[in-house]
Image (cartoon, rainbow, N blue to C red):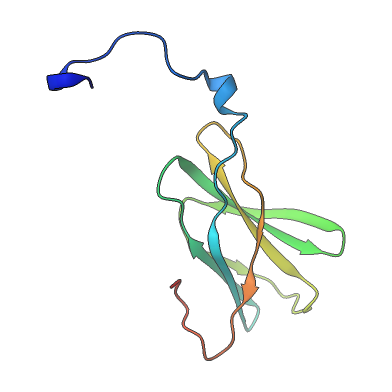
Length: 116
């Protein structure tokens, strides 16, 4: 919308192919809590331009996508209680570009289950 409610006509400021080259901001404050085979991962969401969040499980050199959600939290049933397993979250834009991954920090039992 332009001035006084007028629609502005003309070429877009950026093309979809150019938009795919722009990586979104990564999620912030990514946390993970393990509880009897269930893993809960949460983070502070990006306020705009994100279609989904992609969650990865990492073990050694292996990184596997385990799911996507449109907003936190993400719940995952994981029988593997190996402490060497970690998790990462990325933000994916409407143009399918993906942010850099953020490793989830473990939450201690006395910490709150919601992002601060």
